[in-house]
Length: 25
Image (cartoon, rainbow, N blue to C red; front, side, top):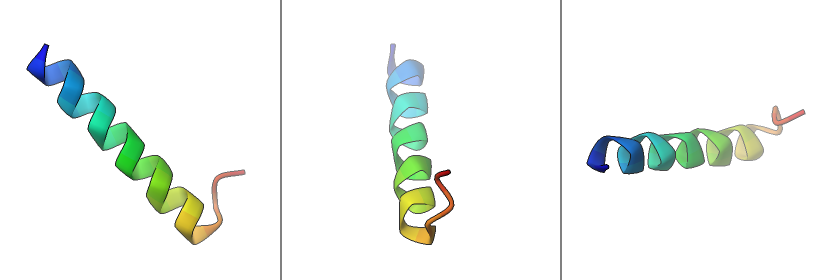
């Protein structure tokens, strides 16, 4: 389960970075 949490967290961080860069579309 820890692996899945880490993966979900990493995905969330990646999405946040994309939003910041304005490349989420």
